[in-house]
Amino acid sequence: MHTHSLKQLSALLQSKQVSATELATHYLNRIETSHLNAFTHVDRTLTLAQAAIADQRLAQGDVSALTGVPIAHKDIFVTRDWRSTAGSRMLENYVSPFNATVVELFNQAGTVTLGKLNCDEFAMGSGNENSYFGAVKNPWDITAVPGGSSGGSAAAIAARLAPAATGTDTGGSIRQPAAFCGVTGIKPTYGSVSRFGMIAFASSLDQGGPIAQTAEDCSWLLNTMTGFDEKDSTSVQRDKEDFSRDLNQDIKGLRIGVPREFFGEGLAKDVEQAVRAALAEYEKMGAILVDISLPKTELSIPVYYIIAPAEASSNLSRFDGVRYGHRAAEYKDLNDMYRKTRTEGFGDEVKRRILTGAYVLSHGYYDAYYLQAQKIRRLIAQDFQAAFEQCDVIMGPVAPTVAWDLGDKSDDPVANYLADIFTLSTSLAGLPGMSIPCGFGQGEKNSKRPVGLQIIGNYFAEAKLLNVAHQFQQATDWHTKAPE
Image (cartoon, rainbow, N blue to C red; front, side, top):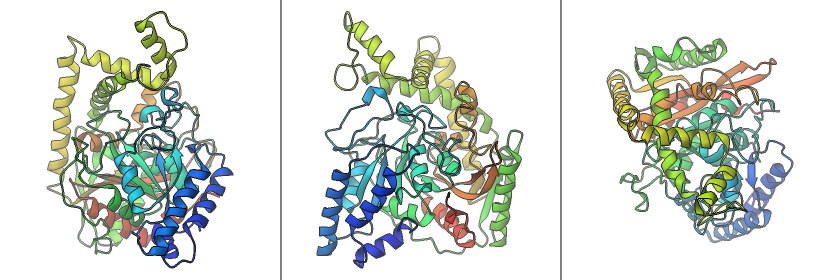
């Protein structure tokens, strides 16, 4: 059953060939025997209680397309019953009194929660090695990183520990792990998915999205998780739409923009070969490749690593040991409690970004760094709009290399930051982007490691992106490949 798509699982559930309880038990058994460290909290009793309710709904005919379907949530979305840790010691035992809007929407649809998925601490990282609960392992090669920060989500889908998962993308944290694990993930337009109950990293960048085996699966998940939320001030007020409506449209004549900046120095040959082969496949389907330029691509790294830490330093100031979360056991006074609590509760990467953010926002540096970065951010967005006058979608690699070995970049944060070169600009512009598997490259020990093709669209063009991805997946079988 774990090899089935959401569409197949839904059909089995609604035809009573399998119950929600049987399906949940099947996945829970797989999770219990896994050694990937993809989950931070699994509670069989809670999951089976939800499955029993789903079975009642199925028996009564009170169903949606996802009723009874198991799903796992990135541990950045707060949940009422499961722990919500954000991968941090600061929230090691925290249980939220409410559900995130995304979680609540899936609950209303009748999905069954399998548990919470491991992630980089407060979603800060590119390899999922920054979690307080330990690194997640890539199911294709357990010596490799799964990508970050949604590494637990991508690893769980690739290893068939769950048929669907939520993730968040601040600078590539859905697309990059999806690429490294050979699965499909989409970051929708900023504001499409509610951030209420999503533990904040960088408020102007954070965006929730789905990770699954196929583009069609992602369309089903987006149908549930998108929509206006009055509890989120950044939520966009738009009518609900069916993201699967265009899946079977012919893409003949589609103009695919290929940015020359995505294929320069630093791109590994095996990654380029797989991406070029995918572009050639699109040409066979009648698409037209258009040479374009995104000239400020390389500026996205310094811009992102000014804006994101600045917002993080503000958002994480709430974790002070007073109201909830970790508190130091011994302290002399209030200031000493703050200092010891935050020293003990935060990991090195989180501390690094808080310090960077506080610095660029400080008096005398705000204009020189933060304000200047926001101006360049606008220019990056304008580059994309100029490109979309020449093409319908943009394609290129998700990351410059395949997944690296665990520990290879632990002592070099800049090397981790450079791995986001192709995803950051899309997030800074607030555009939708996705990753689909398109081949394999070679790891350092000749292991087979997945390569992802990135597809970027204009604002609110998710249905188009999913159609373009679905057509590729109808013509190829990369998305069906699974680790042994």
